[in-house]
Length: 373
Image 1 (spheres, rainbow, N blue to C red):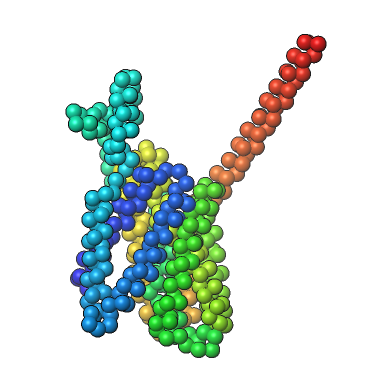
Image 2 (cartoon, helix red, strand yellow):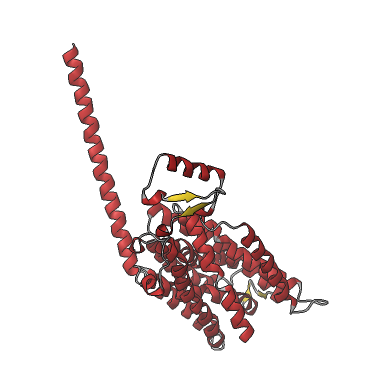
């Protein structure tokens, strides 16, 4: 238990850091970009299961299912340390150096351009311009952080319950008149992750299009309740029906989970209340994802007890969790709807003004033409 706690402690440092790096590099269309990028989590789930299963049989043994992924992470860490550029301002390429020289020559001394280069051509920010880190207390006061944090608690509760228990559930249920073997069950359960990849990209794209991450997350969560019910009720008809419903369920369950842990965290980490400081990014991500990780612990643990009574009790827990997650976003949903309405109203007003201007220009050209005649 101690070793597992230590492993979780060190591994938990990775997610806030990588989301902060992605947030530094991408400011527009974050939903779509991070939805595509977040596909690596499902890919990792699939690859991890395959690698672990490959070394379980002799002459390897179960211990190698920890050692081999551990070495893979070490090699990944070396690549990250050697090649990852955490933010655009750290990319000291030739074009940037030339730009600094041009700015100096033009005597630009605005806060955004107060940079200098030393004798070796290295670029530095003046000490006065360094951003101060944001504390946990200030991060918690950012509007939306607590709502999304508690929402993610229930999102990850549902997602991780499926991640850990779906193969066992498939093995226990009769699908199309027969029981799948443990190996077949594990292979079929991968479809849930594949659906999750699609759901994450869809949620990110829609949230970019409508500029309403809370609204999109809530819609996905309400839809997930329906799909989970359909999977429980009709998934045993045949293997094909089971796979289709599983994929759709994965899309709606993992869509908001992926959106909140990536684009939403990046947006809140650079919120105007902290003056757009990117130094809040990792802290906000850690708060939100940390609360989600608690849900990831609670869900699978409760399932172990509830499954002794019936799978209906397990699915009832999932329905209630998804519903609670959606309700927690109610305030943000109304804010998104108001914002969409205001943008639509402004767009219509701008369109009316443009039409009036065009009409005035046409009348002017007509009058000028008449005077010429």
